[in-house]
Image (tube, rainbow over all chains, first blue to last red; front, side, top):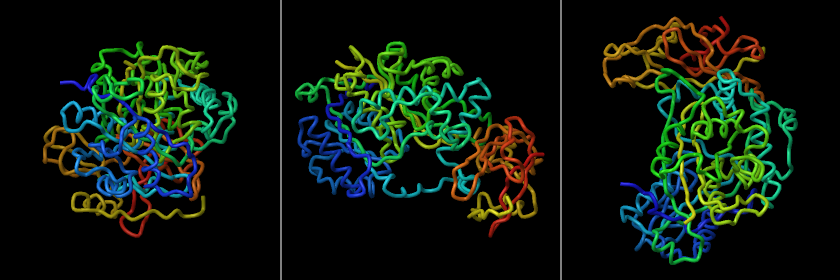
Length: 385
Length: 129
């Protein structure tokens, strides 16, 4: 059994807002749902599967009701919550449901307003008494990974900075990007230290916004007007300290989700023309590129240096919308926007200055949770038909 | 760092209350599985490695080395250093480093446990040995 080629992304929408104090979170979900439905050229009454994560106010049933989905038709819901990579997992789960005949048109939404106000806290896990007092945040949890990666492999701040430099080169062409200025390695190194060894410019932006996808069957996708983009491989995985045995923060759960996706797709990292890689921090990108097999473990620093991730310059164009480092990071969750830019690249709808020529194979990969504590990862491999 | 930082009291539960009772006596406890011999942290009743329920409390030496750390410089409550310590007994534990020069922390450095008071049971931290 495989989901290879059994589900197509027929509709996409990214909310143009980066700051939405004048809108409700549910409203942003509705606006992105409407956008993706219109992009696909279907009606909301056709949707028979709905997928959302922890950012959806109240969860699946209040959202299905608020969005006015057709409850006589809706027959599959999934509210898997794995932080920022939830939506990449949803894409795989939608493909599974479609392959099994459990739904035929799935809607996946993400939206929220962390730039406008404080996000609600997550429910505590069993570890709470033994960890919560120590103040793990995204910045320092990823900082701990970077510190150990530098120790074990000699990775440098200059190498990490190249990831931000590449993202900024792409963001200059995105009219919606929060940070459109091209920056240099020196700019990154001279930005204030936030949590050692990560500088401010090693960190992604905080933005309001959202995005949505329509996932459907090959038959329905072919009946619509958009270029055909299908999912050919998918993987998901989780990693944590697991009792503290053999702790190794230099790799992510991508070492498991990646090979699962590549195996299902029947391709290797060398075949990928464009990569959307979750960039909550520069170190996130570097570790995930290693984990996915774009280079050997420990050689990520060398791989990302000297513009190798810049479209038209390097070997692996990444995050051509400017990514989380420069464009947006709706709800502090980068998984959705990673899929959206991968689909734009495969459709040939990316900005002409960053469009990868003849882009037929792309990867969208992300993590959720805290890389240095416990997290999930998901990998999607997409093909233009 | 003259200001005393206020830490939240552990909620505790039946599975972990023995840890906090021992902490009140200045003892740092880990769990060890008598079936597979592995130690783990934070404490569970079922061994996370072999799933045996034959886990027992063991007083740890409180000594270890820094596996990694990050000095959080932007915080409303002032800078703090989070990290992991690999205990002499094996498991690595998440913690904060306290009562030492946070600018001079190093991976591999020897550290030891120190307890800080809360309104409930004291919390374990680590300082340079």
